[in-house]
Length: 462
Ligand code: PFF
Ligand code: NA
Image (tube, rainbow, N blue to C red; front, side, top):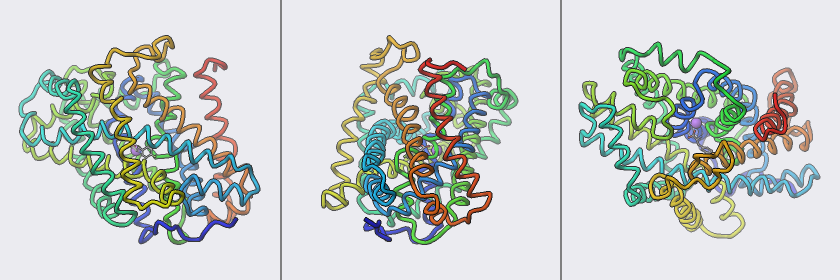
């Protein structure tokens, strides 16, 4: 079976459109909400360094592999893996990589949408001037009021899921490309302005020191796994999101250059966010390790005290919602593409089914912040002692499913596919650049993922 040369779902209008869409998928809550709070929980500098190393050595090569597979397979990740396995005379069990990716996308979106709902709520809080002159305490209580009310969380989660499914239903081209074109540059400008504010806050040095001075006694095996998992999460890797976007890539384009650009933009957004948030954490006597509420309990203090803070804060949360929106779309696209290909349903129907299922699973996350806040199902395992269902979902997806998906993608690309097929598809010749990629994907990624896993389970101790 030879894979089709064109996707039935349509194509991006240009290479730039692909770059924008993939950047839209990568840049999201992972950068602005998650990166600061997990860096805060795991001691800062050393964690950041491990994360940066994972982006360079694992993230970029795997992103290239995913784009390559998608562009060669031209179908949803499940069918792409099936077709490429057939092409390489490999076991058709490889399609399970696609299935696992669809499952990971569902689970991630189920909680991603709830957090995006917080950002939506904060657009309106900000607009109403709720943060004006606010203290750390005041801002903290606004956050608690929101998260301890399941009905409110449900309403925002529902709104965000509907927004997501509307764009997904409309298809590849309409809407998405335009949104990202304006979103990423605006987000940069706003973050840089926030960094300017943080710089004047009095604790900028302390914030930078926290983020960039590595103290390896502060990070354990589990912290290393979380840093690696976050490299997959933040670049949207290991579940087929970038693969499915690659399948809509129309012409020959430099997969290497494109992947590096996307990874650099994503990393820059995360670091700018961290540099804005930690100075505020320290200048307001807050704890860096407070968890998922971190940005919602720090940034509003800045908005509440700067001139034009109402406009600025509103704009910031609007952009955060947009960033989450363009990521959410890519989380569900692999499932929707598969439903259209294999079940003969329209995109609209596929979106409704996939969206409704995800929405339902989201209830678990909503309750984790209030009624079930003290329910810790795996408390008998020490690293999960205080983990809620939301924490466990996040851990399972980001730190287990995505790295395993990435491992499978690496093995498939560098051990199962014919070398000459990957040379042809990556289209950068057979020189040092290709060889570096091949080496990283063939040896470095698999070994790194396996070592980190073994280390956390305690089977091996480094
Ligand atoms: N990369 C997104 C972020 O950093 O917010 C999250 C994400 C999107 C993860 C798509 C995985 C994915 F497939
Ligand atoms: Na990201």
